[in-house]
Length: 196
Image (cartoon, rainbow, N blue to C red):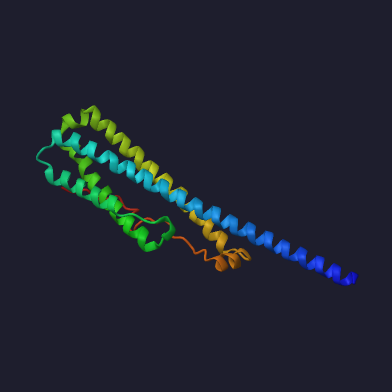
C-alpha cells in the first residue's frame, strides 16, 4: 500500500514538473513572438514617419524646382507604392520581407534623386524648411536602421529559442515556426548611383 502511494506521489510530482516546464517554455515563446511583432510594428512606424515627411519635402522642392516634375512625380509614386506594401507580423516570410524591402528601396532611390536637386538650386540649399526636412529624413533613416536591428535581434532570440533542445519539442508541438530576418538586399553595400 505504501509503495503504491509513494509511486502515485512520484508520478504526480513528475507530471506537475513536466507541466510547469512546458508552460514556462510555451509562455517564453509567446512573449518572444510578441516581441517580434512589436519590433516589426516599430519598423513600420519609422517607415511611415518617412512616408509622412515626403509630401512636405516634395512641396518645398516644388516651389524651387517646378520643372523637375518627373523627379517629384517619381517620389510621390514611389511613396504610394511603398505605403501599399504591408507585411503581416504573423507571417514574416522572406518573400514578404523582400517585397516590403523592394518597395522601400525604390522609395529610397527616388528620395536620393530628389535630394540631389538641391545641387542645381542654390536658394533651395539655403531654405530653412528644406534643411529641416532633410535633417528629419536623415534622422528617420537612422531610426529605420536602428529599428531593423532591434527587429533582427528579436527574431534571433525567437529563432534560437525554438531551435534549442529540448524547447524545440514544445515549439513543434505548438506550431512555432522560424521567422525571417530583415536582410539587406544584394549590392546594398555599394553606394547608390544617383543619375538625372
